[in-house]
Image (cartoon, rainbow, N blue to C red; front, top):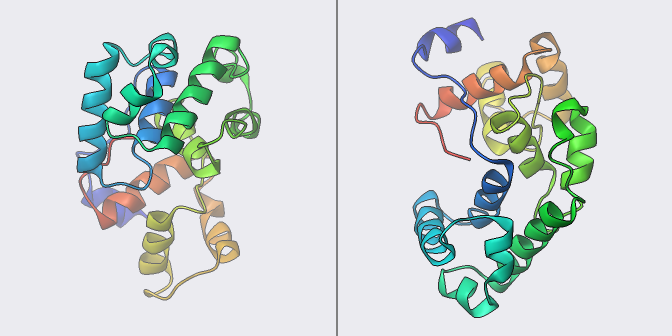
Length: 186
């Protein structure tokens, strides 16, 4: 791990903006390229005027679809917006909650799974000890650096990662950088 950190001295994890904005952006970017996601996001921001719960809920499905969103992503964004408006997503309480409680709250929204919730913990809430075991980039980096390139089971990765605690987020960040030095924006 020390060699990986030394090889990436100019990179650092940085906090993202508003919680709704971050989650909406992650939904927009699901299963499409970074470039395509940015294009859809730009059209959505232009059409909405501001990417905020009230604005998304006020838009008609046809307007959302015209931005390049699938019907399913329109549903997900509406559900996310409603969660922020009705208080079922308790973002004001999240800083005081344990990671698993936040994940449980977030995955109630269709379109937000555990991986998205873990990315949110890492990039929005800056939680230091998140180990996204389902992340392919993490799996590939651990296999490369700790398994001589052979695929490793999730249990094996968990064992390898024990010494990283309570800084699993940092270790994950640097392992990602070992595969791709340019950070992806979540």
